[in-house]
Length: 460
Image 1 (cartoon, rainbow, N blue to C red):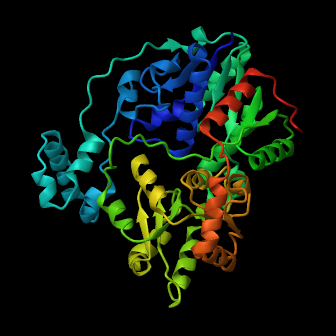
Image 2: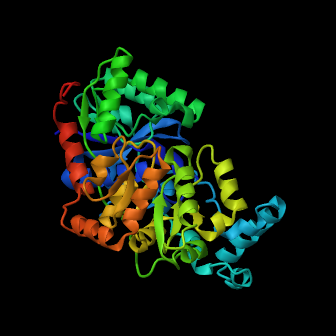
Image 3: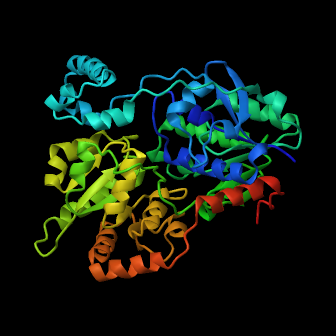
């Protein structure tokens, strides 16, 4: 039976600096987990090794556990990747953000106190020692896995599939070109065409890299997977405009939770705990212009002026992204609009799970999404949401959310008011409860079926 190799180069790079994975990477892990369950001995991981400077592979079962997750703590040493020191969470250092030298001293002291198991240092400063231990407790030694050159393992007729952020990785692209030349099928999952659809809201260098990668991929790709019908349409249109052809198969992503493995109550940071002490609406995603947060916050500012409305807090949960200085400065200068809006910088999976479980509803008002994971994540917790009626988002929300025009604050405000209405919200929640949501198992099965069979024509 033909072997399947899933490229995880972006995850291998990411784990050198982080202890959790991003949304796209989480999706890749879930898909790989299902592939392992379906074809345990024929599924492999492949990646460019940043230390060995080679494109290598190993059995997926060596690095993915039965729950379908990568142990991020174990992954770096298992692969022999030099793991950089994980950054200290912002909540531990907010008080020193304008004093870089003092901040550096406290980082050293904090790491030493944490390593020695001395909570007094943390207690005296109002910091959460248990959270620190949860994030940074020492792990047992990890036995390295055996790695092989990909060129020795992959045979003609096998498939290598890129599920994550492949663009801008020249060594990975070279490995894919070589694989194609040797008769190995190459398949890429395209998550979105944001740099082409919204060029003014993307990093120009990243946008150029993405464009060149997608154009060049047509030379060696057997076919593309698209994470939504909307992305498939955008991809086919782009390829046609470039005078290129490509077979595109749609494998929608899931409407599923973050999958945090909790052993008892979650260890919440003080900021997350504080944010959830009052009723709130949750908006998950990177802080960047495409997420349309400026308009959403202005809607909250307008609603906060109404004396007839019991308005909940708006919680923004996501890491800092591109072109955010003005927006975040406004939040800081106004005290989050007098406390109505709070930003949680890069909450971990356990914290996200907690935030979803306890919110009133979610808000995803992006100008464009390739899929819209937070919409489906909210649905999996039984939560409806305010959702943009653009790009792929109606595919995720179905008839279980309230739609709005993301370019109109009036439309967004009307949608928020509908979700604030208890009876309207209850009706939508009842609809969610009666709906069979798409799982990551469904996604994994569809991806494997696409990889094992012929791709449809590019106009299908």
